[in-house]
Image 1: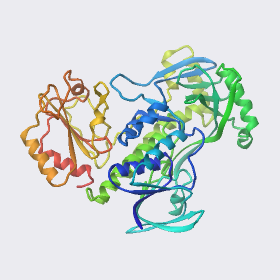
Image 2 (image 1 turned 120 degrees about the vertical axis):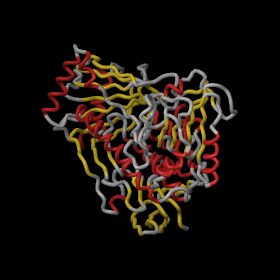
Image 3 (image 1 turned 90 degrees about the vertical axis):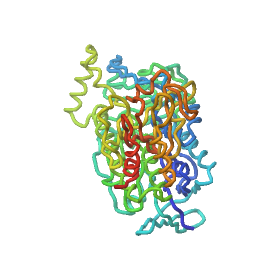
Length: 528
């Protein structure tokens, strides 16, 4: 049997890609050498943007029910709080800016959803040991406890992580920078009333030369990350006795908690900013850690990988269904590698602050922290720069902006998921394809636009209309009586946004000329 798409790696990124393909009607087979989900917290923070991806896949409910949402964080220097950040949030938003949830739950919820789909086949204990491709497809050698076999597919998504077998099979290498600092990551079970916030400690009296990060997780699990000194032996540092001694000191002297805690899981972490030069290699697309490694600071790794999966998934589905030329896949690398480079720029700053790579950086970091003890203006140096969704402004799929707009998401940016009514939000009404977000006064579409939409649909173009009106008119229109959405989007009656299947804006017009719509769709599908 020849499969249309194979995915190597059943972690969060690989299974998200399978669900995105299934959302568009494309079957895939997912291969993983494990027999179960990963243990330990690993990636624990999901951003609002990632939750919106999960909502499109219809799987967000267990994440919201189990996860712990948060909006703020604190930074301490010499045991004094010097900075508190608050991520933007309002009643207009469906999701909190961040939720904390251990990776084993993230994987379980995604796998449970995939198991419900007839379009996703999960194959465990299936290790890919060889990969080759030609102009017509990709061939995999798969090793299982029952024996080896060959698997043929039209396209391959490589989601097999930092030690990617697929990447090595093609002789591809990640390029970038490795940072000196190492962190021990430990999960402990601890009962505490401290709220769900991100806490960072610099130069505490108990561990004066160590940076410490603390996150609360569900089920009374607390994640503690602490930096190793430059002379410490990492092998000795991850011995259980060593971890227990260090964590006990942190819990008691830094967090001010009692001794009633249990050690659940631990690992060693080193920060990298590494990426492939091109995320597409013929019929192979690299997603997640197989394409890039980013520092944990600012919670960018998993969130960046989920965006990779959504981006690659819809494009591959549309190409396989004949709704877009194969050239659409050429946009994957510039869009997602551009996002990675943006992450590097911000996460690199955070990493150099958290783990100074030289004596000079350490002197500057400590000087900034010292200033912040008595000067509010200096506290911003300790801002962790949390992950934000990337804007594909330079993408070949994105049209230039209409200068008449003074507000709203620019072309390339994701839609704003604003509240329409109690329990009802804008993204709840997006379909699986392209959407035209149209604003009017009384809820009627102009005749010229109706005709253009009918012509496009007759040609098989999947284009939904999400209509917001100031007053009730046509039954299909959603009412924005107070004009809050018009203001948020910088719109007037007659304005429109063309939205891609991944919620990113392809084009916008202050006053839409229906004739411009078809050209924008061609561009957004990789045409010329």
